[in-house]
Length: 420
Image (cartoon, rainbow, N blue to C red; front, side):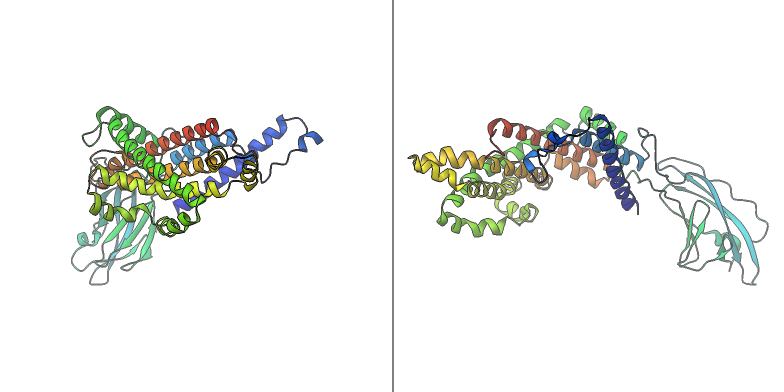
């Protein structure tokens, strides 16, 4: 339910901000004339540029939604949170003689981890004695009120509504479910906010980042964890590129090479790297070699396909023009095929790097002592969600930074991309 609500709010904010920014820009820009309608960019991918305002608003929306659904102190508006405080409900007890008596159960709902005293039980007016209990928010508590009411007494109603084992009755600030043995299981209203064990607020993640950056985690500094992950990813990516690109060129230029390697590439390409972990352990052990090999295989098939597609996509008229001017095969390869295939290879490199970063956590499952993935896995065993999210954010930011650098390198090294 909460997930669907988050998705609905996110979509609504996306649409609302789009139309709001579009309206503001239309009001600020001068009226369109015929000259402004000359260029048609719809469907032209090379003419589409990221809207920076949309990027900024997107990040702000993600932060606001995250904070609103986790009760963050950094966000001014929150969805309803879990009930915390005193509440009570009444129940009806029936003894062996068929007599009935009403009593009250007092419940103190407190924040998770807080130490509180159990409230006093209410004064009894009949044979039903009532009860009192404490429970943390998002939790439930078993109340055996009928045991205080004498032998043979059974709870038959809650808040005036008949109840039987397995049935649930709504009560103030929560609900009560009767167990098979007649006890009452009280669950306070959880609200719409997410429990910190599932999704902590942003400030908890930031404070954990500062703590681990200062003191380290699992006997290693934060920069050591990140550094080892970077080394493994780059080693696997570079090996995959050095082998994958020449193989891709060979498959794009030679029918025999394509026929020879195509079945292997098309067979291995859909196999997820996670499925190769047992085989990598058997062949290369649990040391660094196994981790690098796994990341190498993650990048290899992507780079082969990118290089092959780059060669296959070279405009044949350019090749024919080079031959007509007396170029040799080596000159055609160097001056026509390689430059025209580089844009496709750079795109494949960005995809391969993303796949490597997505595989590094699995690679570091193989008995790694250091690494961002190892840090995430270790934290998950102790349900330290704030550390898990912190690790995911670090991996995402580093991957995003690498992608920006690769795009910048592509702009500098392949300035002819998108041109005829």
